[in-house]
Amino acid sequence: MSRYPEAVDVAIVGSGPTGAAYARILSEAAPDVTIAMFEVGPTVSDPPGAHVKNIEDPAARAAAQRASEGPGAGAATVNSPGAVKSGERRARPGTFLLEEGYAFPGEDGLPVAAMSSNVGGMSAHWTGACPRPGGSERIAFLPDLDELLDEADRLLGVTTDAFDGAPFTDLVRERLAAAVDEGRDPAARVQRMPLAVHRRPDGRLVWSGSDVVLGDVTRANPRFALHDESLATRVLVEDGRAAGVRVRDLRTGEEHEVRARAVVVAADALRTPQLLWASGIRPDALGRYLNDQTQVVFASRIRDVGPGAGAEEAAPAEGGLSEQSGVSWVPYTDEQPFHGQIMQLDASPIPLAEDDPVVPGSIVGLGLFCAKDLQRDDRVEFSDEEVDAYGMPAMRIHYRLTERDREVLEQARAEIVRLGEAVGQPLDPRPFTMPLGASLHYQGTTRMGERNDGTSVCNPDGELWDASGVFVAGNNVIPTATACNPTLTSVALAVRGARAIARHLAADLASVEN
Ligand SMILES: Cc1cc2nc3c(=O)[nH]c(=O)nc-3n(C[C@H](O)[C@H](O)[C@H](O)COP(=O)(O)OP(=O)(O)OC[C@H]3O[C@@H](n4cnc5c(N)ncnc54)[C@H](O)[C@@H]3O)c2cc1C
Image 1: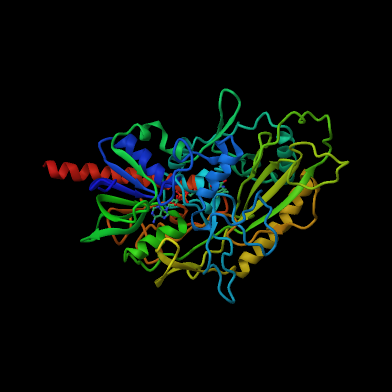
Image 2: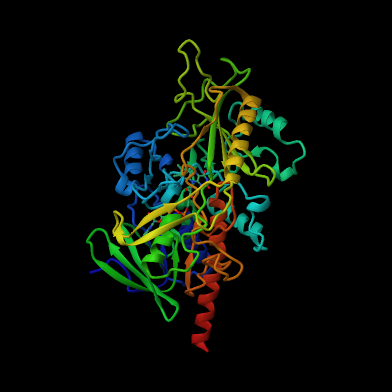
């Protein structure tokens, strides 16, 4: 007996925030529609898809992270943001690295390209920064982009006030603003980072994962079912139309066909094109225009705050952001094509002299993400002969920084030192360029286009040019070179796609009834 239905209206592959956004919008807008979601990884948190940082017991949290690391589980991970050393290939907890094929001689490659395999995908492990795109990061051919971004804020539970009580956040923002804001439009000035987090009435922080995106409406939908440990091996297309998915039940090893009228592939920026390739859907732009955001990091100690400044009682927490942390945002502009995320860190990871106690919250980690100079040849390719640990076509990444990329990177390195000095005393005078792939923001591999001219894979609804009823979701759909954290934008694009499916299914039904 299979645990899967024989047929549904919509099959969704991947349970990250973009797959979850499809399920949520369909549950709200088309409650009669039957939906099956297939996720290769296990359920690691409760409710399914919840952020593992909400798990209070450190041992249980570490187990949830390991269970998300797929074939990489057990490998050493980086235990704090920015702690990667030069030349080191380590994944962040909850993620695993591509084992091979990540770089080729004479190319830069993406040495730390990473994935997560668990219910919730990377959103069970993310930082939750949800800035809006600005300038050329925006998708100019989408007139409804702002309304879609508002919806994405709603689905992800984005707030800006969770850290308003945190010590020194105002001070950090004021110092950054003095260094940055002159001549900038109000939207591009230094501000609080919108974050997918809220505070419970008892004061504890709750980080949003796919559980928040799904929401009670999806969980209560009797026509929605989430199947974990279920690998989609093929999207079925008949007569140019979506017909269903082939799924391998990882608990039994058996394969099943589930018929569907629409299929959504939301399987991350590397595995979405992989599944299309495995299904024989191979448009010219598939896997191409791959772009990652080169990341520079730096750390400063806030000037003129000493013991007695009022932060001693805040308890340091494990992981990246602690309870006393604030996050500031230096928005991208076309003149300065990088995006700044400035986080106050716990004192714990910073080794300072014993007789020089660190005031909690007084160490500031700065990160600048650079927008890529998009190239058609930057790509993930797939093998017809070799397979990965899941038995899917093996990946090969071809990726190069252009001269323009290196110029922007140098600009970002100079800017981050300037910002770090504006805030306080740099801990090390040299900024650190992270190994490529560290941003975890891979985009472009199934990009959206206004027309079918060979430079895109899907239309503005995320529906494939080559197969009607097959939709793609994720950062891979974003056609622009963004520097800002992309999840808010990719959830916004998923909202548009889900509405299109609801419309298609309603029209199908009407034509059957007539
Ligand atoms: C430590 C960390 C910090 C981050 N911080 C931020 C941040 O601050 N802001 C931001 O915007 N982004 C951040 N990100 C990135 C963010 O988490 C991703 O952009 C987001 O999760 C992408 O959503 P998605 O739904 O497209 O894909 P994912 O969340 O990657 O989910 C895809 C899912 O598909 C599943 N899957 C893949 N192939 C198959 C298959 N064949 N069959 C079935 N299932 C399959 C995978 O197991 C996975 O669960 C961070 C990520 C990490 C790990």
